[in-house]
Image 1 (tube, helix red, strand yellow):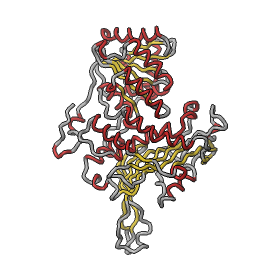
Image 2: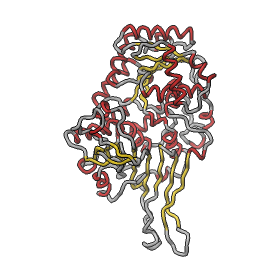
Image 3: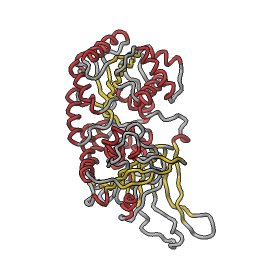
Amino acid sequence: MNHDLPSGGNPLRDVRDRRLPRVPGPCALVVFGVTGDLARKKLIPAIYDLANRGLLPPAFAVVGFARRDWGDGDFAALAREAAEKGSRTGFREDVWARLSNSIRFVPGSFDDDAAFDKLASTLVEMEKSQGIQGNAAFYLSIPPAMFPVVLKQMARTRMCDNSVRGGWRRVIVEKPFGQDLKSARDLNDLVDDVFTAQDVFRIDHYLGKETVQNLLALRFANTLFEPMWNSNYVDSVQITMAEDVGIGGRAVFYDSAGAARDVLQNHVLQLLALTAMEEPVAFDAEQIRNEKTKVLGAISLPDRLEDYAIRGQYSEGWLGGQRVAGYTDEELVPGNSRTETYAAVRLGVETRRWAGVPFYLRTGKRLPRRVTEIAVVFKKAPHLPFSSTATEELGNNQLVVRVQPDEGVTLRFGSKVPGSAMEVRDVSMDFLYGEAFTESSPEAYERLVLDVLIGDATLFPRNEEVELSWAVIDPLEEFWAGSKPEPYRAGEWGPRAADTMLERDGRHWRRP
């Protein structure tokens, strides 16, 4: 990979290289659990949209594997329906006709040796019929408990071995990556034993979002922000991932995981790492992941977890003009459940750049609105020549990166109010993706699936990142064990203790 720096030492590669279409070579994508929600709602539409954009090679095949008594035609019908419903780029018959000719389905359970033998022989047959040249990526869209079973079957049939068919073999692992540090290490060892480490892609769909990637461009392609991106100017950082929905049909999984394991460990800590990382020497997978690993290894927990590690559970309330049930009234949730649906914590990053700057993280379900954002809150000016009455409504400058929805960036600063008196008040300057660019942003799974097929691991956490993230979450889970989450009504911004946490530090949560 070319590590040459562009002129001026900027670590971002020449933008002209990024404008060139990246099309993978001949290959197949095998999807385990292809009848599940993730495959139908995200993966199949993403594959279709890549084909519609001309970003898949002519020699490309999709192979579904699931416990259904189906043939190729049955799976093709399901895939067509999923593509029609979920396509971002609009459904076209000519595109579908080309894609449907390369669709295969292998029925069977994960412990069925004969089914995996059939899958292996199907891939061999498709080298001739579809010209995939022995290249295949395997997407594990299955419950985490099934990972070891499927991986061992792949090892037995040697379909994961790059040397067998003379091409590349890669695996895509969906979160959660384990249940704690020990299980994450066990899973990492198993995956890295079956596949070579560089062929393992641990997918976190948040890293495929345009706004998350724009955070790197914002910091390292501009001279405006980076000089102030440190403890000399930054008062605190708030990272919020709020959902207005409940748990839906995920009760069995969610009640065994909770908000911290489900979201903090992966999405939110990855956003923290990207916010706090140092400038990479090159914009490539190894250098970016090195810098993220340094941040995750430098995270410190608060001394008083009872004050700075808060969890809550939503109760019955009003949201969107409708009354919604409390968590323990959801279907399949035990009435005495102590699983948190909200988690907030103050963390530190013990580096020269960030020493003394608190990072406040929060995530929850049944909150007033769906929003994910990173807010960098700057210190107040050391001296204001105006009277106190002139600036009584002036707050801290803020730079807010909105990940979803309404993707964009907001800069909040003080400005004089029109009139004869000197009065300074906060105003906002907004950049919106949808208004600044005519081209719509691809879905996260489009970008990530394409990167896997190309072999670009830049947006995929490696095993050290996963394990360091669990090293942050495990002590929180141990502290919370046996305790009952504080209730908060659906439609509120979490439990009262979360507000008290910031008030204790003389701060308050930003209202998204």
